[in-house]
Length: 118
Length: 319
Image (cartoon, rainbow over all chains, first blue to last red; front, side):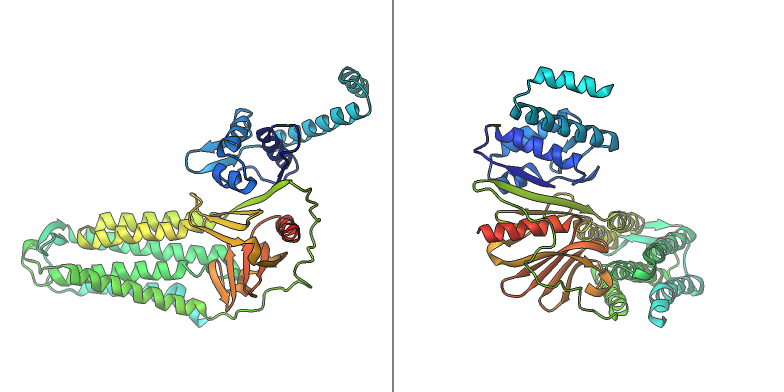
């Protein structure tokens, strides 16, 4: 699992960590049931505050992607269906970003997705 | 094959037979017999003779069964070097305690009249266990240590190159669990604790302590989390991420993915594979090879090692 964050990007760091873990799960870089580094370990590795990591882990837990255990850190709980859904969500985000760069509005993107279903 | 036969059958059978023979041939045992002694060495607990004999025999059969089962489960790959010594130590310790108990009771008209059993006897039993563990370790050790597969050149990563933007912070992490080690830790710890309750007395305390130590030692190698970041490499052991081993980035000369064959690095667990090479082996297969600036090497079994090696090399060149 590779996580990259960059303080010069506009998104807050906890969101960048959250997105990094989601991307890794979607890409199959981390298996169902696999342990993630403890919040303290990850915070030290990325040189951020522990609370920043805990906030990201909390968001992932609320979405049912990881399980937090006292003193044992975080364990990935993403079955195959969830992993596939995450992968599609990842593509959707890329699509929206790409559309914005092309000057296509979000509303138009929704229309285009509906059209693509036909 | 002779070593294998002694390790898996000969030794355990000898322990079991020694105890069974002593139980059958002891001329003059009271029934019930004294099976528990107070701190001062005087008998203060009893058990029907047949239950005591059966309990020791069953405990020994469990240890023996665990050894054979591990050997079978591993197939041609051989035993983990820790399993055989633990099993033999347990067998020898139980046999010694059984013999000591029978000897103390022999000739007594009543269990209360049994000889005193104190700390020296427990020390004797522990020594027997330690000796048997060493013997098993020596028996299982004789396999040749080969040269692990060497890559063409360390530092030229075969994984995707990781491009690092200035100011970007990046971490790579993977975890690996060894199910056989989890089972082993539970069986060893639990088995010794059960034996401790059955045996009771000072011997029981020794067994309980042994069980806890065995479970902690085996538990540390059930699970690892490997992390690569700007500081270098870190390996967190066990369910609580402790102990933790680190290799600072400045001490790393190169990293590469490699295939780790437990046969060629001397077995499973935390091993000195050969002088200047340490190996952390939870299973056979993909792993990370780190060469330090001073030439020492560290091998760690971990999935996706190519990605970890690529990041380490990228971080090294960024400095």
